[in-house]
Amino acid sequence: MDPSVEQLRRRLESAGQRHVLQFWPELSEEERAAFLQELAQLDLQRLKEHCDGATRAAAAPPASLDRHIEPVPPEIIGGVKRSDSGCLSEWEREGLLQVSESRVGVLLLAGGQGTRLGVQYPKGMYDVGLPSGKTLYQIQAERIHKVQELAARKFGSACTVPWYIMTSEFTLAPTERFFQENNYFGLEPSNVVMFEQRMIPAVTFDGKVILQGKGKIAMAPDGNGGLYQALVDSRVLEDFGRRGVEYLHVYCVDNILVKMADPVFIGFCVSKGADCGAKVVVKADPAEPVGVVCRVRGVSQVVEYSEIGPESAGLRGPGGELVFSAGNICNHFFTRSFLQEVAAKFEVQLKQHVAIKKVPFVDSCGNQVKPSEPNGIKMEKFVFDVFPFSRNFVVFEVVREDEFSPLKSAAGAAADTPTTARNSLLTQHCRWAAAAGATLLDGRGNAFHPAASVSADPPQFEISPLVSYFGEDLQPLLNGRTLQTPFVLDGNRAKELQAAQSRV
Ligand code: UTP
Image (cartoon, helix red, strand yellow):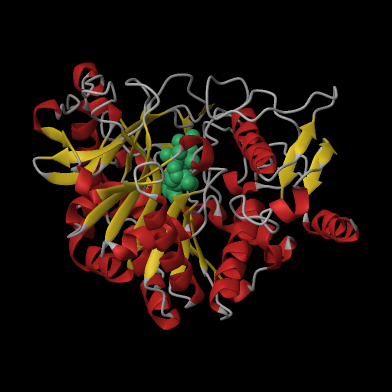
């Protein structure tokens, strides 16, 4: 063995990772060079700590926080149904003002592997089967266009909402290619900033890094809380400063109903002087597996559903409402200065969470194995774990049917599938059309009657975000009309309807 490789072997051995080079003699020159390059990027002392920490954390019994939790106090909560319409309009105005002054950016967390959905490409490229065939990325891009337009129209100044997209080794190249092929969906490419989060090794239950190939370690992105390190690594914090972006709306790629740079939420947070805020929905039932925004020993944070026992989860208040009801939907507000402070002071303190996963590997005989049972530990940081560092944390409660329908799993799963995401969006658009005075007929000629809940078989009626961001401006187009579905109300259709209305 080459002396430098021999030295590496010794260092791996003292880090407890001798097996890493077990297939070295079988590797080609090229594979060896690539593997050495990969290994050179690993800090072996930290690797040892990482592996030891992962096994310790995976073996630890789940923490129970029941005795220490209390709901967040009502004075820090606003909401679509909790707050009066005057306040909501004022917050919307404030939010649009900030957007119009180009002080708001959106930041997409898109580094995940989407294993439950099971596609080989980034989730944002997924088409849930809408009549328009739009992907999640396209819907989001069009909402950015629209919110810029709404702000510019209200305040008379052209503005930009830059789109920051955190990717990982898995998602960066295909995402870049997809945006290029689609001409950035009409956005100015320089206002779409993609950056990459770090990757860390997956580890077996006995603390060994997993070999994905004979010359490749199984690496996984370091969780969506890898954001804070990535903001520094990629100098994105500086980009905020250069552009004058003071407020960030951070969100997950998979919520088809996400309100990009939501003016009401931004305006609420800004008006309250918050440095950090979370949108929540009321938990559907005590057993719904979502994190809950609450206080632990007096400090606001998200508690995972595994950390609360069924008794606390099921506690109800005098009106029958769940006491711990604030379901986290990964829709956050941060000021730039808060993010700077987190990056400078608190990032190192972020908790590491254990995810037990099925990680493909090569066994000791060199066979490629796709495990049917979980065999590995991936350590992840979570984006919401910075809430405890906030000096002024606020919560904004929104209506689930209007703002939250995540795409997590493949068709056939019990919840959060392409079908549920599609139906949420179509039902919402049908509700907007009905509120604007239209009658929608489905394929059998039956009229749609809007209900609050998501229809399992809504008419195929879709509104382009370029026409309406959140149901506004539809009445002049739709009032008194009967429309046969499928129907896609895009810019051209809107012009035709407008022309027809003006002829009446
Ligand atoms: P999820 O926890 O739902 O993970 O991520 P996922 O990768 O999309 O799907 P599974 O669990 O493998 O099936 C919530 C959000 O956080 C992002 C995802 O892209 C998604 O928007 N994320 C997750 C990251 O940006 N980086 C990560 O390391 C993990």
